[in-house]
Image (cartoon, rainbow, N blue to C red):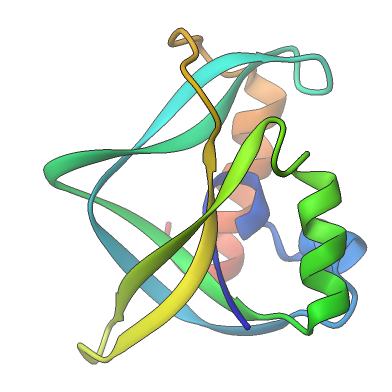
Length: 133
């Protein structure tokens, strides 16, 4: 199964710890969504990442190929379906190829909340891991 990673799940070290059999595939774009920070994460002491539909915007992320057992681990880590729900997404890679994948979107509404510097550092490292920054 293809998984669309954004925010801290771009961090290859973190993904390796969570999903040891994850295979990095490519950098991709999710059209008509935007990245936001909402709610409160006790772990990160600030807002956590989410994607929201928003015409004309895009989220740059990455695709991993995950075996079923790793996807189940990721569901547990992402507290799916209590905090996040799975979302089928259509992505495009740098060559314009379409990739059908699964990602996570926040279940219910949450107020915008700034992320912590620590959380942003993990996200920035993930962007560097993929050559996005």
